[in-house]
Image 1 (cartoon, rainbow, N blue to C red):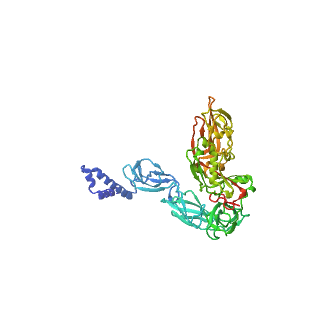
Image 2: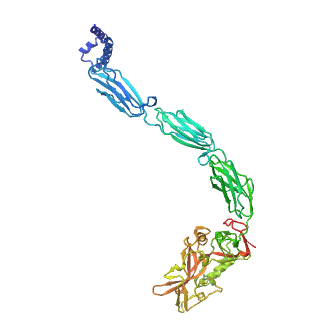
Image 3: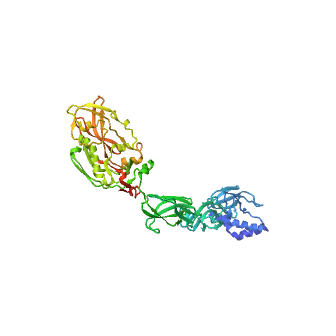
Length: 632
């Protein structure tokens, strides 16, 4: 009966087509085979329903092995196992077909085990085929792998910024997880001044506000859809919107002649004190304040000295206390008058006098002029000079009730000297020129030129070790000249050439036996040989270290060239400062009356009798506010 039913069924499905296939070889077998294979599978299914058996293979089983996180997402590699399923009546070879992510179809007669490590979603389609070409239904299996933890979040702050990473307003906080597509949520909490319990916010952004003063610490991390978390990041927020609670100022001790010492106090319990801003006004208690200095000081008390103040002036003082966030509190104003006293040099210690060296004095010479006559300077022409009114004056030394000032720059350049007349009269010409142009009789001030002793008194250079052409400083020698050789007449009056001043003009010359003494030397002025204040006074122009100048020193000197054959040559000249060095300039040689000419500047010095003047009733000794000097 079953066979009859099968035949009827086949005939009803195919009709005469079976016979046509058998008898008509011209048909396209390949095309028809594919069509009929599907029909046979359908028939097989129908027969299976009728007979309880089928010739179609069962679908393979698919098993996924891996570590799952949230939302059935794997956080590890996934092992895919595909196994053949056999029915009770199924025999013969069974093939497994599978395809991964639209890739090429794979066929195998063995069970399959493969590992997938690619992040993202993987889709596998599997089916079975028996030895007669019948295939099972297809099974599609999809899964997602996410092994990588999310990137760290970013925390941005928004508010009014103060100093030292403090905010002076409420602070808006934004935690951002970025633009990744698999972000699930953000978790954060705040500890410290503004505590917030751990909070989870779905999505990629979390926003909240810090409102409490003090230090708050934010921690945050990201959770992705697989449940993986980023690293926990931390952000400290410092907030201080409150000004210091106190700010006061009070005089500390007595005011000095050009200074006032005060003590200021401040307190801040949140961010702490950062600095004290000391201000003053000479016009009003309420306006016109100038900041003298901002002192960085984190304590609750600060002592400060207002220096370089002007005498006989009333000062209004106040302090602004600043906390570390930049909030400020202003103190009340105190009033203090400066009454400056005369500087009594006789009462000063040696250390205090040394501290006065280089200070500026507001000295003004009485204008004058001087003519350097060609009769005496040997330069070939007379030159006219007048007082340089732009000179400023600095303290060089204080000795025996005498205040000695030196000009802060050179003056009257092109002061020319030449030959034996320049040597004979150079010292007197230099001193007379400075006396004529830079004295002030009402102050008992007498002008003169700088001399070598002024420099030697403040120099550590040992001139006895100086060597010039084999002849050391201080060596004595004599040479007999015939009547055709000349030398400066003044030399016969200065046996050792140690005198630096003459009382008579000399224009002539003589001959005969000459006895001399080596008195010339040279060295570069530096801190190796003198303290910095004297180096500035002697070497540079008004403290500008690159502004070297050349000037005469009113001191004669003699140099002897000692040749290997035993002969010698005298050279007469004057000391000078040249390119920052103590040097000498030869004006006359004894060799066939060779002469030389030089034109350098003056360097005036003024000696003042302290018993005739009052010094320091005003000013602070700076270049812009020199100490006053006036006749008693």
